[in-house]
Amino acid sequence: MRKFVFFLVLMTMFSVNAQQIALLKYNGGGDWYANPTALPNLVAFCNKNNNTKLATTIATVTPSSVDLFNYPFVHLTGHGNVVFSDDEAANLRTYLQGGGFLHISDNYGMDKYIRQAMKTVFPDLVFQEIPATHAIFHQQYDFDKGLPKIHEHDNKRAQAFGLFYKGRMVCFYDYECDLGDGWEDEEVHHDPQNIREKALQMGANIISYIFNN
Image (tube, rainbow, N blue to C red):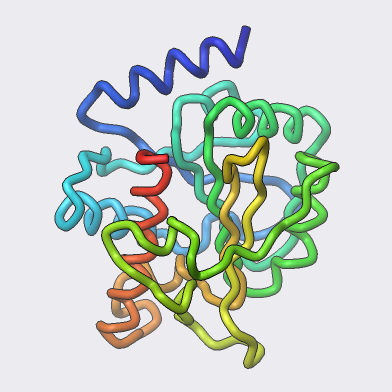
């Protein structure tokens, strides 16, 4: 029944003017609230440059909440531990199987935790590296080399990973990139304008991919 309701919600979303996106508030001790200006700036960029009509208010939602099914795009970020209970994992799995999308942006130090947490959601799925030829890198903006490098952490290349359920990408994970930091207000990290622009353009591509695929 929940999946059926979710499909109806998604159909409604595509027919209304303001679609709202959400930040995932998870347990485990990680700072889920990091990058408070990131999502508002991404929404503003998309609405200005990409003809979207996203709501300017950002929702906060927990993995176990029925409200999760109201949002076509949910963002997860932080630096530390991420834990999903069995009920949270089941709810998140139903959301993703039913058409939802999760974007994970590793602020730094989250990798080993998020991989374990997502295994509780999809025990049989593994993160696959997404090649630069994938459509998500070629929406309004072309990234011929794949995921742009926004912040330096451990002298590793930026990598994009995805979880695919029945051929559909349900989760996009940016690693050694830090897109969320690139979306923040300029005075937060003092990133050059061209770096912030790349981060916002890649974020806009993710939003576009969700609504067009």
